[in-house]
Length: 451
Image (tube, rainbow, N blue to C red; front, side, top):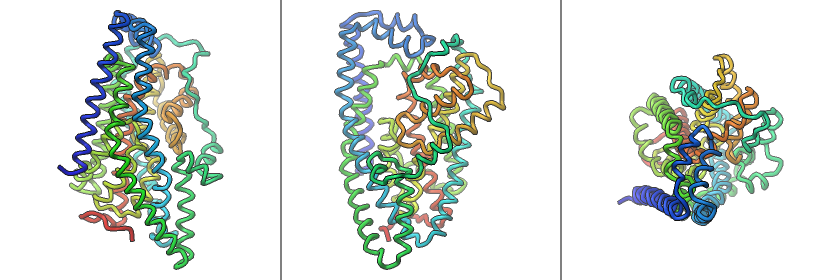
């Protein structure tokens, strides 16, 4: 069995074992420390939002059981925390070294501008399609209309801070005041900006920069080797992530919010089809080869609910597909700030779901305005904790939709984030392959070494 297939199998097994372990812990401690949780949950129903669900769980388990479960979840999630910290350890040096080498070898600023223009064209188009598809589907499926929730108190808060929607705030997030600080906080977009300047300057000084390119080339290969070591820990991280969330929420959360979760995943499936069709127009039948190659990073992103966790492996698979390493190292980091297709769909889907839950009608003009606002405010949010919820919070306040409606989503956000993260990986892989094809840099065999 190939190493990549073996890792996929191990991750899948770890996911199943994590769900079973979390379920056993959840059920056992609920039964030991008091019955009646299910009845209380049913009484509160989804109309109580997250607070109603948690009240039901707490009533059934009792304080001792709840404390034990929380302690278990906290301890088992250490496995996931370790893995994500190791991945974050890799991201900054990997992005910086590969991007510097890629830009320096493109040769001149014209090539950088040409590839950058094609990349942004795809990103903007994909963002608009993702937001628009989410808007259409939420209007067709109407997932929130059955809730008929009363409007909450005007002072009620979701606890999620709204994003800063100022132009100044956006540019402050894009341009670093310290590259060291940007690397310390894994601000990918800021690292990309500095790497672009550094790479162009390295190319501009000619042969004097060759030693820097060779050094960065070596660093890039070393970091890819380190990535291989870190990926071996992925199954343990997946096990910890699934065991923690299921032990706390139980399988019942899938039933409580089943309609919304199911319809959102139908929307993601539709987006995958649209992205695959767009890729087929450019790549032809090779798009299916690409989808097969990215199954490992796809499963990793889904099970850990982190697109970032899949970044190094996605880079490797794109190079195996035949994408030019220079283009991979240029497009992929940009995609993690400008091309989060799954998160884009979620923003329109979730915002209108909350409006529907409170029986608030938004006209087509308001919905289009919301779409355009989200296109702007969602850019450059990579690295922001719970970035999608932060942007949604700001959008809700702008359209006078109760911000407390986010409480309806917080309980299942992890389950939704799994699908968003996997979709982000598909979108960025497709973008990189398409730009490589547009640049006539897509080969049929494995990509060669960095030249």
